[in-house]
Amino acid sequence: MGFKENALKRSLWVFHFSGGSCNNCDIELLDCLTPRYDLERFGIELVGSIRHADIIAVTGIVNRQCKPRLEKIYKQASKPVFVVACGACPCTGGIFKNSYHTAGPLDEIIPVDAYIPGCPPKPEAIISAIVKLRNKLE
Amino acid sequence: MSDENKNSKKERTVIPIGPYHPLQEEPEYFQLHVEGEIVKKIEWRTSYNHRGIEKLSQSMSYDQVPYLVERICGICSTSHPLSYVNAVEDLAEIEVPVRAKYIRTIIAELERLHSHLLWVGLAGHFLGFNTVWMWAWKYREPVLEIMEAVTGNRQNYAMMKIGGIRRDIDNEDIPSIKKMLDDLKPKVDLLRGAVMDDPIIHARTKGIGVLTPEDVHNYGALGPTARASGIKDDIRRDYPYAAYDIIDWDVIVEEEGDVFAKAVVRIKEMYESISMIHQCLDALKKENGEIETTVKEIPPGDGIGQAEAPRGEVFHFVRSDGTNRPVRHKVRAPSFCNVPTFEVTTVGETISDAAIILAAVDPCYCCTERMAVINSEGEKSLTGDDLIKMSQQKTERMRKSKKENK
Image 1 (cartoon, rainbow over the protein chains, first blue to last red):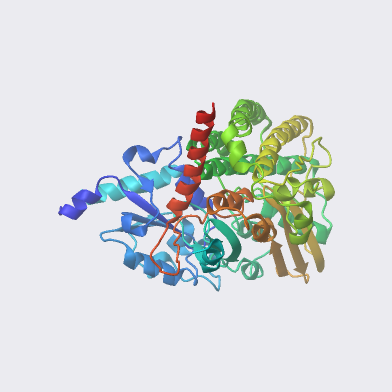
Image 2 (image 1 turned 90 degrees about the vertical axis):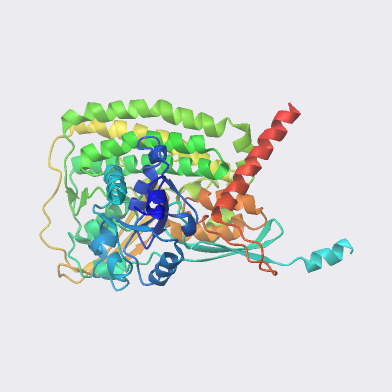
């Protein structure tokens, strides 16, 4: 394990990107940080700048207006960075798959490390994804 | 340099807010034009969240559309399907069984409870009261648990169906729902105390971002935003749907129109919601019967449906040509009317108050993160965190000065 990976193991910081979502996944992500689930115990928190982030959590279908901005944000991120597709929309397109404004599932735009299915995924599912991501580093 | 010269040299700074902000919710883009600390003009641009729902709806059958429209907004995921089924029932003249009406009301009011709790938490966060945020979101969890028990999902309930509802509430479950509501009431009292008795919150929110009744009419503001300005406007009372004309409840109105009044309206509405759910649950015990009527076909024609979402009136228009798909489906959400009121509420206020004024309308908003100030020299830059920090620091200053005065 390299130095960067070792450092990445601790206190994963999350940048949240909403690419045209319905707010549900976004709220469930935020819910993970509130007292019932309290992910902040493990040093996991939402950050305001992509340059500080270890994880990009993408919600929503990523529509055509968001796509160039997502690519830009991905380029700005300091590597290595994990990309998590949170919810049915970024995984497959979900119910909006056939919409004229969908830019395609997330993995056709940027590489994805973890998929969290569900509409919306429960906070438990999000926590489980983060645990799996962390174990992947070992 | 004389004062006059200084003023003429003062340049307008443009602060873009959004479109991406890590905190939560959807992308929206605002531009605040400021002179010094004072906001002079606001512009906004939406469509970062456009998903082409109206077009998609035309490619789906009438029974599939409720699943689509409940994904318009995650927080209003009952109001949109409810409004849509109201429209189709209006079009096809379908009578809904009474038990289904009560259950629709229960789900809609549970949604209002969780949405208002969510708002109180976020408003607390913007003011620097993170305790209120954590409390409100903690006490929101039991509501979501009941939702999960009744509908099978924490969000996106999929309960509405043309002619009735999809799942019945088991009469044996009613005591547990009632117990949750009884447990929730002291928690709402706690939040009411935290918001309404706190001198700092009074200082931060009273007289801030005032929306006059004239402006409510001019901009067509809806829901709690209008009711906080003394306009008694509520779809549940004006055009009753579900069981709102059978049960007993009050429209909450406040006169001041400032941020504080908007908070008070929402907190008082939570009590009304709790009382409404109790009444519906009591009625359910006596009202045993069908939960849906069979719908064979949708005749050609137009239908309109309304529902009072936590943020205001949701309006759906459906046109049918006799086939199994709508030929036109138009949706208007309340934030569409409420967001333009920023033009009058934020102008003349300081930047540190802008965050709470924008949040007070409860738009599907929260773009205060990732902000950059571009001034004439192009040197200074602020992030959205800084904006929240500025807002929180103002509260802190007030708290200190309060202590010193004592």
